[in-house]
Image (cartoon, rainbow, N blue to C red; front, side, top):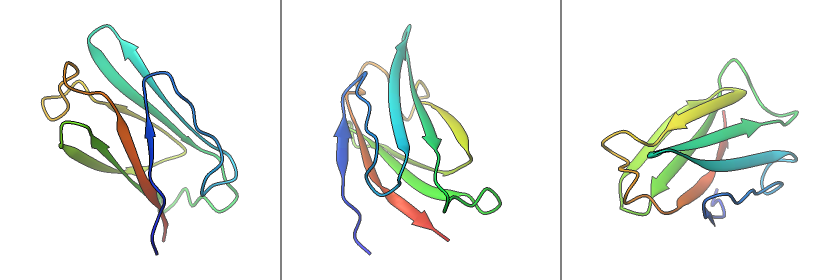
Length: 95
């Protein structure tokens, strides 16, 4: 299945999309970049999680298994905050 891609700038929120109630927010906290990911959907499986992939504009990528609420710290060396400009939402994979 091919998933649509959306790009977020700092402070933007996106709701809807593949899930009936999905919101993504990126906050600039000092020099650290955080992605708050909340998945509220009747199809969400807390036991198995949902696969989400984020890719930074600098070309580095990270993947994680989301829980009902997941905070990802992009201040790590793989996501230098000075170079981090946007996030690509690559899709949700229900297993």
